[in-house]
Image (cartoon, rainbow, N blue to C red; front, side, top):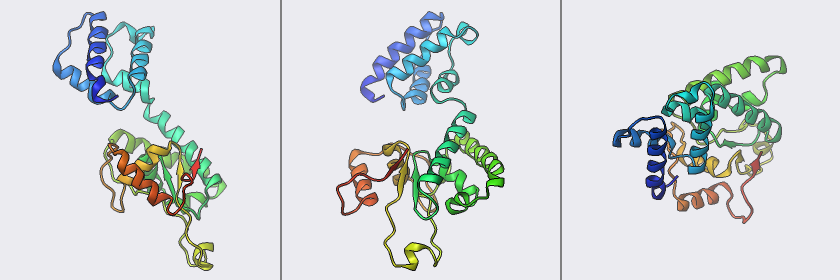
Length: 224
């Protein structure tokens, strides 16, 4: 949602709380806005509607955590989805190319697991352990919400890699998942890693396009 929808959102929350016989306050509305502003008005409205229809939880007025859970899923859900993206990128991108995911917690978790190259070249027998380690790390970062992460995960840079061995230019990093979110991860990350921030202007995103895909009019490589 954007600022122009804040009044509409406040009216929605006032109506919802009135349905449960609850009053609203400026503090409550501010808290709800901060928690839901990254989602669309329609998504929030549907989540509130789903809560009201829940046979168990719907008898009580919704709390912020209830609706965020509806919108984002649990941290376990998100870790499982993130692992699926990693597995897809291992096959589609491989160990030699840099990669940027649309979720900074994936970057932080992969660093904890030894880096992109190591994850790509993990033994099949160790895959279950790697998945467990990744998901636990991802859950921790997601629940923490503020953490450091690298802007991109580097592929193989060893002297015998095909790019260094034959003097080939490194390919642009593969963007995995939602393109715009991946660009923001690239923009906001760093070597030491800043805190998460996704409020990036359109002008900044255009600059990211130039960094990811220099001297060409084609779109950055996207991996589903």
